Each structure stands twice: as structure tokens, then as C-alpha cells.
Image 1: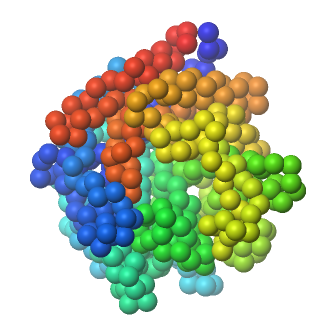
Image 2 (image 1 turned 120 degrees about the vertical axis):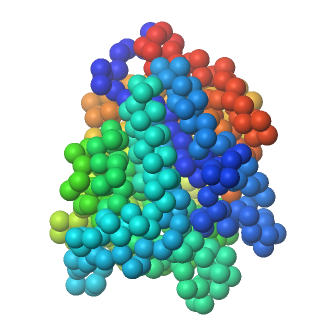
Image 3 (image 1 turned 180 degrees about the vertical axis):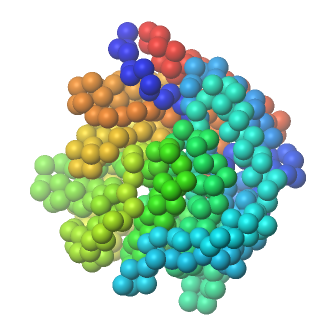
Length: 475
């Protein structure tokens, strides 16, 4: 019998807009996004950066959300996490919308100061039908007894801010460079301001940005292998983007805190980095990988501390820089690190990642103890409440998911009751199969299998284990 979790604990599942919304109807399709352009571009497909699967052939959550919320309710969930799509709400640019920014000595924006007519102008540009649709989604979730964790930004950028093909081919000649450009930070502030006034306290909690470090590292450092737009490989660019995303979070956090009483936080994806052997250099490389992937962004967002020189210690402190009411954790796997001067990563760091031992379909190493260690480190360093916003497995045959769920939730229970960590919710990734970015539809994370032709959902056997946990039954 699994001991009882806290009475107010959130049990949920998670999805994202781009990965699930599009499907059968014309209204469901949102083509004004960099990821849409990227996934459908013939040159990008010819370079084998993406699978060739089309996001517009997806789950059709846009039309079927009421049914999907009923599926979540049947699991015993009391919460659901989903995102709203920036480019669906603002298909047209918002550059002309008035507003000012309080800036630091470098000219970087620290706070958005709207004009008296900012909201009116934004409403004139926004697709208010899409806004009403999102409002109806939240109401439907609540009707099914589901509190909403709302993600403001889960990766795609409007095309009027980012031309991923031009940026990929010739960044210097690209006019729309996405998160490299300061203008993207400023337009994100306007989007955040609009969302904060439209949705206010309807969500139970707000997440500003999902996994900023993944956006930066996969798109700008490991872009040639990850398949993330714009597919670049530059250490300086990657950490400039990560810095810009920290500033974007800061602006969104400040704006949301003025207009909502709900907790506002960030979501990160920290693997557990473990030395592969006893060699001191293995431990040093594991610590370096952990710092660069897990710690750099949290130092910036929580403490306003930036390591611009990538020396391992912050060299800049920005006073009164945003913050985060909670830290969202997307935990999936362990990464075993070995020192190596000959690996594919050697141009960045002299290390290699060993193959998984207990593998998911993504070849990610299943290691529930790693989640406990990650939670312990983050809580002791930053002292913020935490939510597991994602935890799941690509397992198309549904052979390992049940044990994955049980073992990770047992580790979570130990984190709360033995390590005394403040973890307030768990969202399994995912409620339904989804479009897994550059891998397309091949990686199946859903507690419910999706037939992408008929859009039919079919409950997987492993969902029963999660239902029993959510309903407080013996597992």
C-alpha cells in the first residue's frame, strides 16, 4: 500500500498545444509558427533534421478537448496541464502596440510598463475566437473537476518573429531570428501582459516558459543532431538565447504577479547526471554537465545571477530580478557521463554519454532514484516549492510504463516524506500520444493511444496503475 500523499496534492496529466491541438478541422490548424514551418519544410526534411511527420495530422485536441478532459477525470486526476499558443492568439505582429520598458544599464528590459490603451490595441490584433476557445477549455477542465496548470509558452514562436529556415541557412542575413533578438523578449512581454489580463486567476498555477534550457541548447548548440529550429551549433549563441529566455521569464513573472494571485513559476528539464566510473574526470564532467544544463538557468531565473563567461561561477548579479514562486521539474532519465576527448561532444566539452541500461523507446535511461536526487538538489539549493510538471516514458508497446509510473511515484513519495521536500503535484506526460517534435509521431508517451487517422483514443493498460494511485488505492 502506497502511503497517503498530502490532501491538497495535485494529480494530473500534461500535454502541450503544438503537440496535440491540430487535426481534422480547419480551425485546429495553426500554421503561423516556426515549428510548423520547420517540420513541413522540404529542405529541413532532406537534411533529416525532422521525421517528415506533419504536426497538422495530430491529435485534434482543439476539437476533442472535452472528451480528453473526461479521460483525465476517469483517471482520478484533479488537475490538467496544457499550454496556450502564442502564434495562434497573435497571428499578426504586435510591434506597433504601445508600451515602455524599464531597462538595465545594458539596455535589457527588466519590466514592462503598459500604456493606457495597450490592452485595447492587443485585443484588436488578437484572434479573439481563439482566446474564447482557450477560455472554454479552462471552463471545461474545471467542469470535470480539473484544476488547470497553464503554460504560457511551450516552444513555437510566431513566424513574424522567427524565420527558422532563413536563420538555419544564413543567420547573418536573417531578419527574424527568434530568441536571439531582443525584440522577441519585448513582444513576449506584451503577450504575457495580454494573457495575464484575459486569464487572470482562472488557472490554478501559471508556468511562464517550458524548459528554456532545452530551447537554447537543442536549437542553438546541438541543433545539427536534435532537429530543433533553427538547427545551429554555437556555444555563445546558445547561452545568449538562454539569457534572453531568462529575461523573458522575468518580464512575464513581473506582469503576471501584478494581475493574478496564482503561483507563477518556470519549468525546467533536469536529468540526473551521474559519473560513469571512479575516474575523477568523470565526476568533474558530470558536475559540469549538471551545471550547464540544470543550474545555469535556475541561477539566472531564481537569483538573477548570470555566468556570462561560462566559468562555473556567476559574474553578474541583477537586483530584484523576477523570481519564481515554484520550480517545475520535467524529469525523465539519468545520463551517465564519462570523460572523453574523442566523443561527438568533444568540441564543447570532453565528455560522452554512455548508452542507457534500462531503456525507453527514446533510448533514455530509466532511473527513478535520479528524480529523488534531482529534487533534493534543487530544493536544498533554491528553497522553492516544486511540482513535477512532466514525467513519463516513450513506450509504444506499453511494456515498461506501469513500472515506470509506480517506481517514480514511490521515489516521489520518499522525496516528500523521507527527504522532507516541498513537492506539491505530479503531472504524468502524457494524457494522450502526441507529436514529439523532430521525432514526429513515432515516440508514444500517452496513457491513451491515439489513432492518427480516426483520432480515436484507446486507454492503455498502464493507465490503470496511474488511476489507482490518483484514487489512493493499493498499487
